[in-house]
Image 1: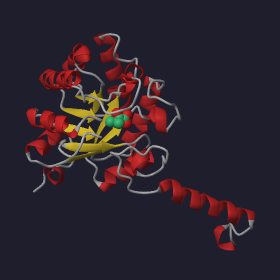
Image 2: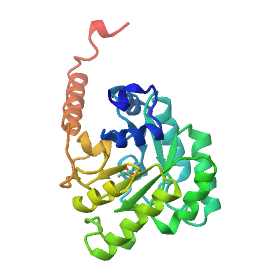
Image 3: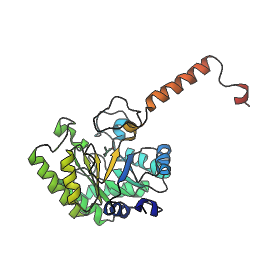
Length: 271
Ligand code: KIV
C-alpha cells in the first residue's frame, strides 16, 4: 500500500515516509484558489506557492520584486482550495536574508495569515541561523539549493549549477547542513543528475528536483510551464503535458466570433 494513499492529509512526515518507502513525491506550483483545487483533487502530494508568481502571475523578469504581502495573498487563495496536499510557501527575496529575527517574522506572517503548512527558503550555510530560528518556532522548512533564482544577479545566468567541483562540494556540504538543521525536504534546482543522485542517496530527508534528473525523491514543475500556458520557456528539463495557450486562444477566438456574429447568447442562454 502506498504511503500517499494511506493518509487523509499529506504532512512533512508523510513525505519522509514516502522517501523511506521508495515512493516518488509529486509537487507543482499554484498561485490561486481554482488551480489549487484542481491539483489537490487530482492527488498532487505537495503544492508550492512559489515566488515564481513574480514571473508567471505578475510578468516580472525575475523573482526578486514579489513582496511578502503578495505571497500571502497568493498563498491564502491556494489554501482555500486545498483539502489534502501539503502547501509550502516561498519566503520572497529580502524577507529573510537580513537576519534571523526578520526571517522568523516573515515565516510567522505566512503561517498566521495564510494557513499554509511550511515555508521554503533559498540557500545553504549562509541562512542556517534563520532556518534554525524558524524551525524553533515550530514552522517546517523546506530548503532550496542549486540554481536559486533569488540570486540570479550573482549567477548572471540561468544555466546548470554545480558543474564544477568546488560548487558541487559546497552543495554537498549545504545539503548536509540543511538536513542537520532540521529541514524536512530540499529542492534541488538545475544541477547535474549524478550530483542530485549522490545527494539524494546521502540524505534521509527527501529531495525534490527541477532540472535535477530522475534520481531525486520527487519532482516539481511550475504549473504555467507544464500546462503550456507559458510558451516561451522550453528548457530541456521541462515536460509539457498540455498546450493550454493554444486551447485557450482557440476558445477565446470562438467566443469573440460568436459575440460579433450575434450567435452568443442564444434564446436558450437568456432569461
Ligand atoms: O518559485 C518556484 O516556483 C520554485 C520552483 C522552481 C522550485 O521555487
